Image 1 (cartoon, rainbow, N blue to C red):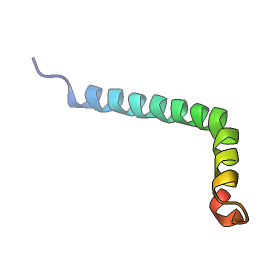
Image 2 (image 1 turned 120 degrees about the vertical axis):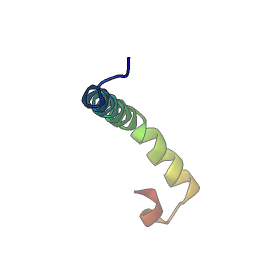
Image 3 (image 1 turned 120 degrees about the horizontal axis):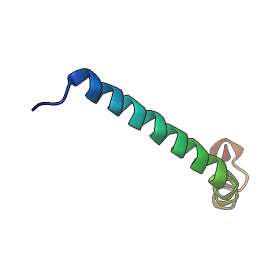
Amino acid sequence: MLPDPLESKEILQQFEQQRQQIQEALNKQTYHQFLAYAQQTHPGEPEKVC
């Protein structure tokens, strides 16, 4: 039996929403690490830091 296309679409949308939420949470947790790395890698170049 084939899955209902609408149900599959809803599942994919839920998955994408969860993926985005997880990525946002990880970005918030690691932002300070990324900022420190960027400042060390590109000193005096603020446009590359943010």
